[in-house]
Image 1: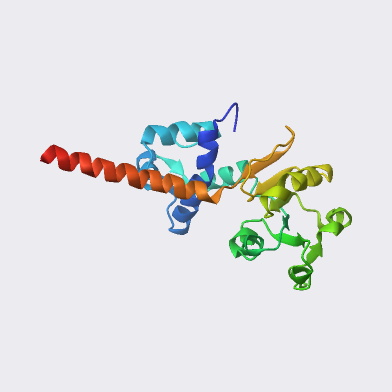
Image 2: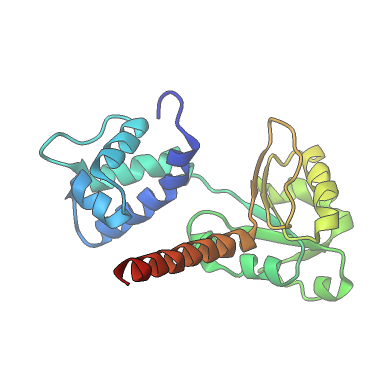
Amino acid sequence: MSGFVSDAVVKRLPAYYRHLRELEAQGISQISSQELGERMQLTPSQIRQDINSFGGFGRQGYGYPVKELKDHIRRIMGLDRLHRMIIIGGGRMGQAIANYASFTREGFPTVAIFDADETKIRQSTEEMPIYPIGEMESRLPELEASIAVLAVPVEAAQEMMDRLYALGIRAIWNFAPVDLNYPRDAVVMNVHLSDSLHILSYRMNQMAEEAVRRSNGKG
């Protein structure tokens, strides 16, 4: 990928990768911008513009080579490397993330959970160790984790972010309902689960209002 790539394109990268994997699994070796656009609900021109951001792919009249493009996007997203994760907070959210098998298959294995609750720590297993939060400094070097998942209460999130940064973790997947402050050389993804529901509610409301307008227009 060369030059500046917009956040909008970056956010579509996982969707491109997912659709291209599905196409490869179906035995499809070439796909046109029209066909890919129909699958992704994007215009052919948007598909071409996005893919040109990734590098030169496809030939006019022939479409895009599915496997080649998929593998290139995989490398762009760093999915050709292993990213070991630790989870801070062994509650329901933390356990759900740790037990989600797809993350491991995608190259994001959870190697340990840290928690302050002795009850949770006693549930530690060889497959999924749960360590006291006070052991994080001593355990991190041996775990070789590059990503930390924050599944802690909101009041503890910023302090934990600062602590992880001081320990050399530069990638944070934050599930606490707060936007974290962090240095420029860190990468933080804030996941606010309610945001998706709010957007869904907005779109439902817009559809309902549009239905009323059409009904009134007919009347």
